[in-house]
Image (cartoon, rainbow, N blue to C red; front, side):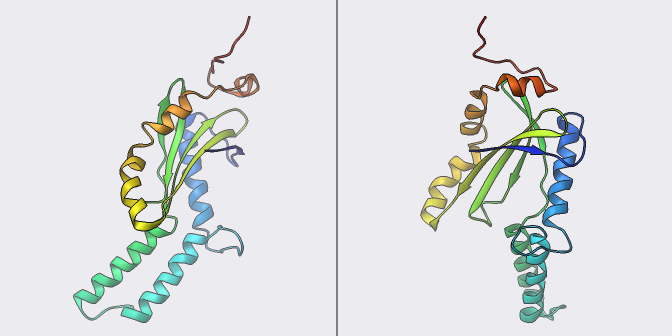
Length: 184
């Protein structure tokens, strides 16, 4: 698990509005029309441009047969999901905290899969908890896949439930966070 303190460029009021801000920020970053070298900014746009160039070379822009058209569409769809398609955030409550959660990657198309839980705090800041998984080889993919698909309700939830948010973060939060190790 990776934990980051992030400042969101737009103001938000609670988890629901944070969901919309994160979705927009993600889309603006990966789908930027002007990709930046040595960064992932515009990466989805760049990947899809390359995919369309390749598809046009192999099948043409308007394939003649239904089979070629289907192969071209499947190729483009696979590349779409291998890159950075838009995300959809959902609001989840784990223990006493409410998070904005999204999934990046699809294990049917990519070997890297991650779930991100964002806990809003004050002044456009959030704590971001990233659970990142890497699948290597077909054997590990098959064995690990079933566990991975349910790990957000077991493994990840247990980790997040046991977190003890410090008093500093508690003082910065809009939500009331209880400190488990409170001494009087």
